[in-house]
Image (cartoon, rainbow, N blue to C red; front, side):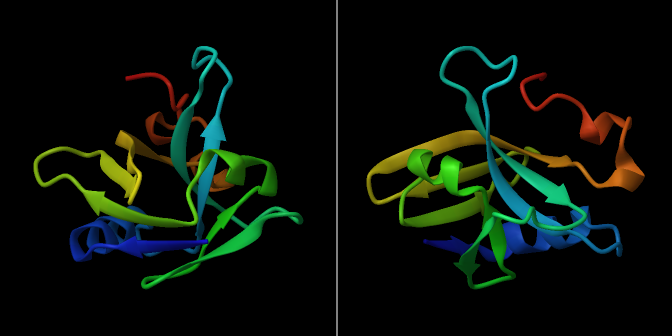
Length: 120
């Protein structure tokens, strides 16, 4: 699995770390999101024991193997210029045009950034 990260997306992802350690994880959130669920980007303290690495041109991303079924083998992550969301796409089409980044690190627990991914 590979994700091509655009320059704007890489810049925004770097800024989102706030000079603190963290790892990016692609997560398919189905709790409270309706029956289909949504793709979310998480910032986590550490990858989970079973997480698999996704190669990128930026930094490695991680994914739970169970969530790979909802993703493509080759994808592109782009940031939207005037909006805080990202777009995740593949050769097959757009996977998510409103992909949110949620900081799930322990230091950020309970903050607005760590809120439910399905909430707008």
